[in-house]
View (cartoon, one colour):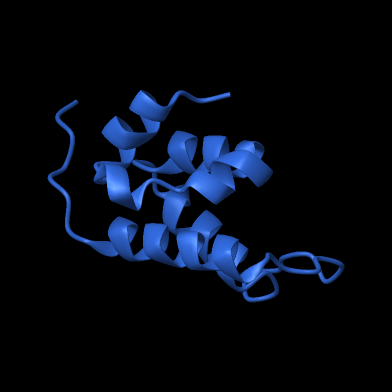
Amino acid sequence: MVSRETVLQTLKCLPNQYPKILEEKYPHILEKIVQLWNSPDGEAYLADLLHPTSSGGRFDRFGFPEEVWQEILRLNELHMKPRPKSAR
């Protein structure tokens, strides 16, 4: 499981933006979001979580509870904000 500090540092979010419910109920999804955050696949993964059939996602997915969906939506909005490119 990914640590709270890693999530805050990677996502560059404020403590009040921390996805607590996502961490509690779907830690594997939060870990994957953190893993893909700075990669080209991050945007596609978040889009698939929000709209599972838009990119060939699974049709058998029931969806998330409203509060989890809201957290993913906030993370998607945060992800869409311009960020400085990492130096490599």
